[in-house]
Image (cartoon, rainbow over the protein chains, first blue to last red):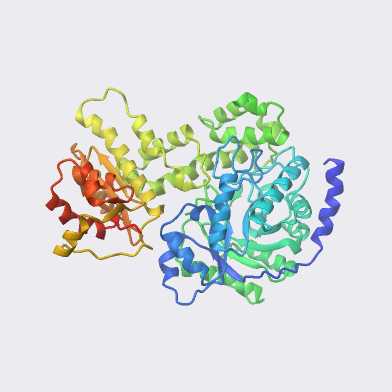
Length: 315
Length: 283
């Protein structure tokens, strides 16, 4: 690590000790998926407190999805979550995309807008994957500058999510929690902490997830994601296709002790069960939040397959 | 392009260039890595950390294989009938070739398959002239165009929020409609087909036994009503009339652009066109 990066690590450490004073607590929500539209539209009383939409599924969508969104935004809070902001890319920011994002935000009036600490492509390409950042000082300065530009353009702080990663660059100078802590310091952005992604990445890279949770700036965590990964060979893959494993619930419990109430969302994006099964899984988070027991999975909890690919293939 | 990209490159740019090339290059993983090494001047060993249990080659493979698998799944979701018609293996072969030939430049997966019909058209073998051979390649291209058009119709602006006037074949309607201004729905698409693709698509959706249809030129109009796609077989003059009504136009003026129109037939068909949301009365 460079000396400058190491001095910044101190700043990152101090940020982690602050308590969460988040007043924008939404409760418990799920990702809005088109497969669930019929069940959701038939609900007289919604069994969730809020929904998160994938922004790209509604940009340029003037069909039934837009009608559903219009109705739901009048019934509960909506959060916009993006997968194509490409914040970490060394390409220029995509202002056409940002303009469309802003227009969607004007329609939705979301509680907040989030995307990922990642890049999705350069030279105008979009790989539609959340690719890992080189965690260097150069990257930190680059991403910070772009976060500030995006926040100015959208007129609000954005939330950044830690992605699941399967590789780390030899050139890395910072851990992911140090990188995120410094990013928060530099930009006043907020965090969407994906507890499953902490679990997946820590398993794949051999670090202690509790160290991650200890060192991330708790006061900046505005939202949490929960999901179920898949074991493929020697690694965990972020597939969002099964129940949340016990290891992730345990980490969630630890996190709640540090953050206090934090808006919590369950993602389920492949092998999608009925809306009410997804809600049943979400309700385990409510039980944990209330300090009550929840039904644990069998010991062989995480499904194993020879090959898997990570989300998002979300519509 | 590639050389200038690396000129005065930052480390961030170089690492991203290397990783992206591994993903989007043609070939197997080793060919992809060789290509990326040549293009970005980096090797796997110089770039990716590894552990004994989880070596660098397996780590990079998660991204390289996931890139293709994810986009093939997205194309399958957009082209389910084509996949059924071609068979999964053949479909995946074309889908992978398409992804490698046209790497996505879109922010949304909805647009990923936009050029797939064109790709199937372009990759047909030249010189095929026996009808069976032509059909073998032309039908998938047309079916792809049909499914792509359906996807566009579902996402475009429709008439659902527009006041709907129930029309009927009454004398009053027939006497007034001639001077009314009409316009086609924003989501209307009219396709000129060489094969009866609409009936093929219906059979595929119903899991009927499908045989290769015979060539028969036809027009299909696709639009949306109550957020559902409506597909109608139309004839030459109907296609011409819809073309003439792309912008708000009085019916009598639009009919000037329609060859072989029979006024009685036009007046009898218009209530259907209004009811199915092919055309509407613009404000």
